[in-house]
Image (spheres, helix red, strand yellow):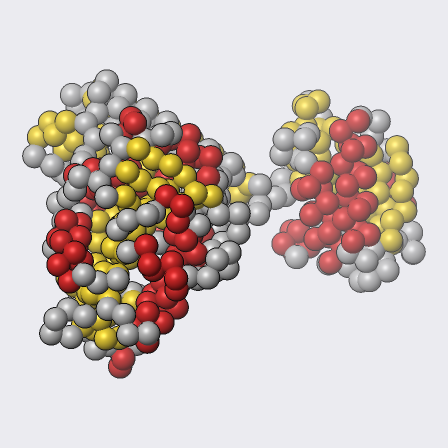
Length: 502
């Protein structure tokens, strides 16, 4: 029997973890979600798989290849435009000439697929939907069946007043090839919202088979954390990586743990992790491959992806850390924090609850971050220092930053005000001054460009009756790699802290 794995999802609700990878490749217990699905199919004797791919398809192809490494034969059907659940399966119809099973590549489940297939064949139905019972059906599509298991009605994401059943659509279907007669080609079509209701209206039989096992859509960051807890608690049966060295602790190869470190069950520690003395790996911690944990760290309900570095005295509680992230001494992440891939967090920085930091961002030492960093390049402790805005040329002080700061300064002035700008003779200052002129003009402010001019000359011109302020850019004294941007008021003095905040 063949199976179709739907693996085209972007996982927008899982960002920043899915900013650089498709949702099916997000790790659960150190293995991609889709790998758990492949193993589930193999356990039920299904070894021919068609994978529907769309977003970042090459990432999935590169990892799974032809499937031989996983004991299956795997082929791919690519969606060039989103086609919905039914449309994506129809896109693979050339491979599907007999009864086949459909399952999502981004769910966590150990459902009994064999029972669903057997029920389908006995009932001789056109389609069979795997159903599971849940306590709270509000986030799912619920299904009601008659005494023989035939489906009578669907309702997507009901309110409590509409709930008439606790059996939900698990997203696992067993279908006959005739189902393609109800799926239009090359347009977005959904199974539960369009195809199945029309099949019922045409008098065909759709079976609802309530199956044993658990199933949940790992569609949000909260669901991802909950899924790890369910795996470690044994509520969902999956193949755990490594060896169970004690009851509830799984450990990979090449792990080095100092004798003075403690590991609380349950926990997963991936291959080649290195854990120093006095580290406390708390319950429900999951460390990926090659994670380095320095002395005196505390991790509780933390999920740390591959090759991350945790410096001394780092504190993580209910946090997800992306691949190759770098957290320095004393950094602290509160409940619900999610760091994307290759995020840098400086010493003693604090990231407050529920903040999301997208990949490749920098959090400066000592910064307190209370809002998510999505477009910003860095989370700074303070934009202004004693001498103005200072940073490494083209690293911290980039043209993008210069244009943004100039635009912010312009919005604190009146439209059509005039601002004096000057620089020293360095190429870095010349580059950044041009970016700042663009930012000022974008904010509706006129520019009087002094070109190369000294600081006293710039202050003198800022006091002109026709000028509302000034900006000077020059290399930082004692540090030829850094640039300092100084903002002046209409009196030629450095702007006040109140003006900086504004």
